[in-house]
Length: 154
Image (cartoon, rainbow, N blue to C red; front, side, top):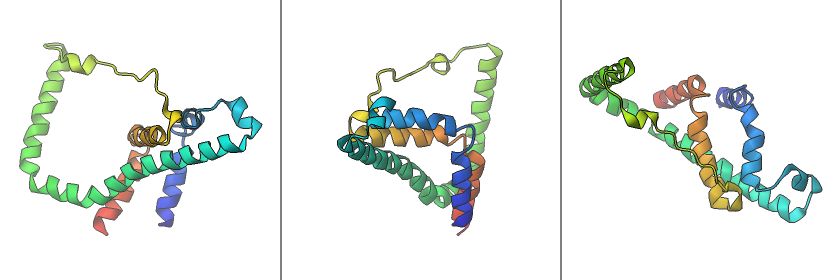
């Protein structure tokens, strides 16, 4: 438990994550820095509620990953032969795509949420936390995979 806590803390203060924190705080609070500096008690309660919902959002993702780690590992082991074939075919398709022999237009698509108003409701803050967890996963991949491996073996 201590190792998992330290690993989580180190991943949080990593250069991949820490610069994102002010933006996420602003997004989930729905308030500007000036408004937060005023110290309005109603605003602070709203920010606290939204922060808890944000944390709950990414906690759901990581708890689900932890709970399913051993099940997914067993499933992958049971269907290893088929997964190997599917992975090989995908690598060949992506290789042909990268060579330019044919283009997969979906791989060139870009979706952005420009008008995301996440700080407007607790549910919005939860969804931003949920999305944050998926965006954060590549940053903490080595630490997360180690912890999930320990969970799978426990």
